Image 1: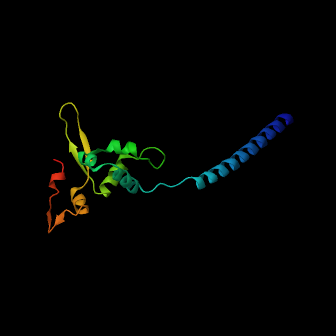
Image 2: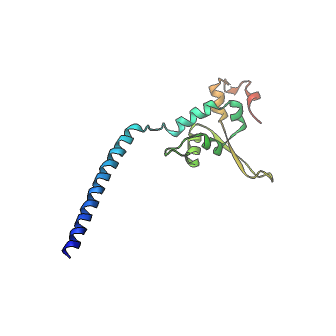
Image 3: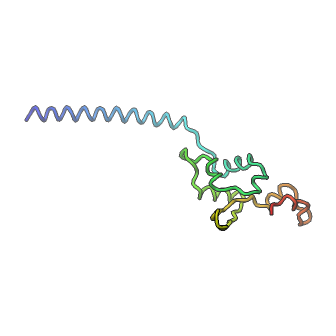
Length: 139
């Protein structure tokens, strides 16, 4: 009996020693990894950079939320959540337009830039009316 309890005690001490060294190695690794990682800019700022890279003609045709999601990087290395992406688009002044089923294609929703903001940025307001930018507006 004495030999069995001695073996158990040795095993327990060896296991505790191994766990303590593992815990020390892990905490060193986690702390070193924290200094090397970089934090991402807010989603709406990263999204604005992506949108600026997309030609305005493509933007006027409408952008799919899934297409934008694929182009973006999320907080945990994956893609951002579609709900967060939609909220960021709204914050940037974009509007969603739904296109209901036409038989084959099914339901679609595309995002378009807010024309009021776009026209103001281009200097298209003069005395409260839009000047000669209506030709650029999609139908």
